[in-house]
Image (cartoon, rainbow, N blue to C red):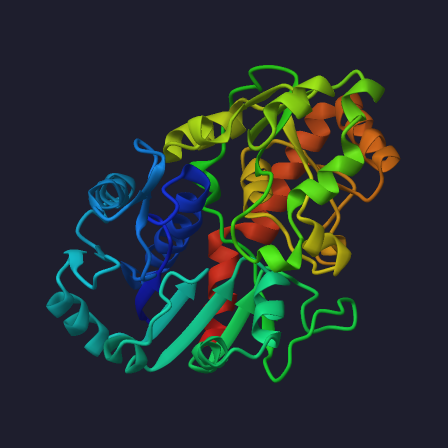
Length: 375
């Protein structure tokens, strides 16, 4: 059965390659399954304009960015951006309302809309996909009325935290049920026959985020545990980071600006494809609460045939680990994982691509999501 879907994302709010791929691969994956999709962004916030390095009341950078990201895939006329002042750009509100009147499913990814406008509420089935587990559930647990009521408006809640709501994680869920899902990856768009451009294990990361500051669960707390790693191994690294470049370089971590490698879809993909593999550390909250979170970025490394050595948040109970994808909790385990990849790189690269197809390919992830969403 073909489904007519309104999909909310945060492409203009965070106009960078990694965030854009997250929404785009839902849109492309759903369309490939024969479903109709329309992208909406309605966060109530101003866009971030990288050219000014500031929030902007003028949404033109964000709207251009959305169009330029979607147009190469035939979706240039399938979007609407609602500015902070309620004005619609791209498709008009009238066009969005007409689409919603016949829609079967509303998918809200990562707070792509924080509003329950009448046109959204009338859609028969409504689901939320939480890409930031632990933080979301702890915010709900505070009991702030509007926030709790917002989540009550959905028929199903999904999360990238595979352990949320299970005995494996102590994150409070209150009266809400969270269903496990993964980021869908259109693996054909990531596969490459080109060898890595060098010997560096890389990642793209934000040292600290501006959201949920009271939780104190950012990536910096975990990364400091591994700060001296470069001095203990022959392996090479490169961090594309929004964070303390001087501190990291002093400890042997070559860095580049995260925004520069994420300015577009293509820059971000090229950075990953040129890498030997990923070395990744997770946010402290994901690790400490054993959330089972798995990175959409890591799934893209795997799809490109790049092995990943990444911190285990509990995901290893749900995704094959040991070859191509290796988890670690300690520095010693991380060093061992890097050595194992280097000793038989071709086998690990081959297995990485297999894991991406088996676990994260959109043709596998999205039918399960839709079946559960429409149950």
